[in-house]
Length: 117
Image (tube, rainbow, N blue to C red; front, side, top):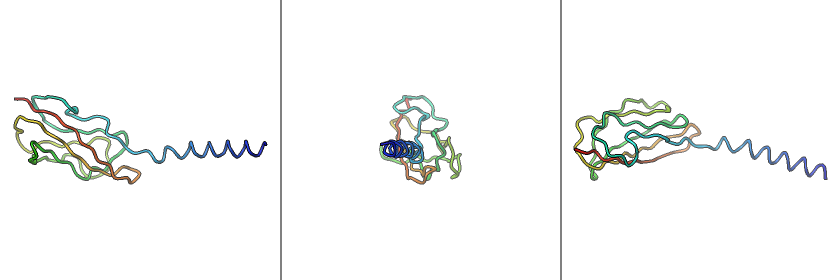
C-alpha cells in the first residue's frame, strides 16, 4: 500500500511539472482595442504574455490591404509595434497576425477596430 501511494504521489508531481512547458504565448493587449471605435491610429501594438516572433501582420479594410510599416523586427518580443504607412480612410479594419511562440508552436490571431471620421 505504501508503494502504491508513493508511486501515485510521484505521478501527480511529474504531471504538475509538465504542464508549464506546454503553455503558449497569448496576446493579451491590442492597440487599438478589439472592437474599439477610434479617431486616429498612429500605431498598432500587440502585447504578448511571453516572447513571440511575429512572422507576418496584415491590415485590411473592406478586404483591401492597407500598408503597414513594421517598427519591431523579427526577434521574439513581448510587444510588437507597426505603423500605418499613410493616412487611413475611415472604415472597419482587421489586423491579422501570425507568429511563432517561444516553445516553437505556430500562433495566429486577429482583432478589429473602426476608424471614425
